[in-house]
Length: 114
Image (cartoon, rainbow, N blue to C red; front, side, top):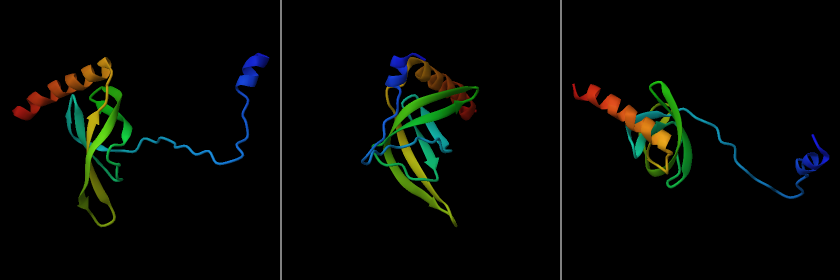
């Protein structure tokens, strides 16, 4: 590594407070999906209007799409667990992601009609 690159990557000590967040994928259940969004269930609340990266396993295809929480509510309270239901609006999905979601919806829809 050159001296210039080393200086560019040198860490500096933070003397005050500098806060951040770590993104961790948590499990969710997708109960409904369309090319524009999804209805999901989680064991934790999602804040209304917040943005999240969602990893979707669509059959044999896995995609990551950004989604905004459009609505959220508690749907079930079991002994020690609360189930939260959230409506997610997909935000500017790439063409590849949109095509994968549309193909999945097209594939699943006929199975439900029979």
